[in-house]
Image (tube, rainbow, N blue to C red; front, side, top):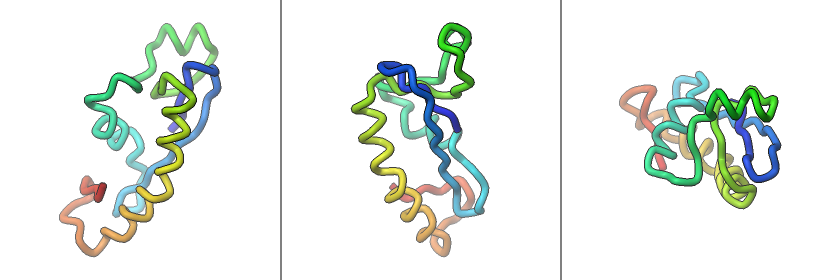
Length: 93
């Protein structure tokens, strides 16, 4: 999934896969950032103004770097949960 870093106007790609092997980035972002002030679903106006096709916006570079630094650990945890998962929407965080 494409993510706009609002502070620097960079677009990055973050992909998170579920225990079923399918990409669940959108679902993960909706759950992970549900109560966050630092990230939100990119507005149509932002896509047009900044020329991006990002689906999510993270406001600061620092927040993006912190999150991106945990993605590999999160993905390993999800992958290792395969034998424990009850369904494809289970995340071990």
